[in-house]
Length: 330
Image (cartoon, rainbow, N blue to C red; front, top):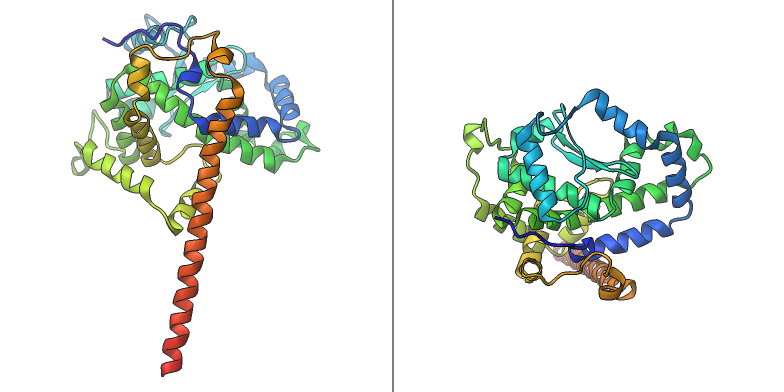
């Protein structure tokens, strides 16, 4: 039975890079103007009508198991308003929290086929975490931009759109790291929270498994995640470049980041009652120290990248010099 995290504030689980990327996003010239124009054009009601028309709303008499699951994680996170939940038919494995003023959760049918009950609960808790963190607005804006393209949104003419898009995607990826922690807190099931990434990465279905990839080993996968997280040298640069333009971090990275948070003791401290309560955010976790923590995260990432680039350049220069010497001997 999961402990109720009474009045827990979202800052208790936010990843430092999430907050840093959000501050950077808000500072991009024209960003606030773009958000206002997109909101006024589509509107809250317009977004919701899309899913009312072409998805199934979950309730006590419609997919009651999913409704009970949503109720459970909402109560565990002590969130006062249970969001609406929709199931939509699509082969793309995903879920989302969308909306402007009254966000709701959407689960893709393919994800429900892929995950077991405990892993699905992790995803529901993850999406509730987005709502509690106030992510839904900017995530909806990002989805609309990616869906329609800047060129098909003429009311954004005159804005420098590429910096907005890149900043949105960077924040979108980092917000996933925060909500991965929320999914763990909502279920208090470390095994399922990590096996979810294994299932998403491998595509091995719970209910109709392909025999050759049935029963994947979580411990072996976590070792793979640690290996990926430890990669340095030129690989570190590739890791950064490979995610440009993506909405989500790689599954192995997310598994490794969540494991580090658990190993650091932060998860246990929260479960034992040591967390920031809603309404005390500025008192218990003022903005300046939080931004300092975030700045350190990005500074270390930049330092690692720069160091790796220097190492790669040295190795390339050494290899070139050795090749010239070998050629001179002939």
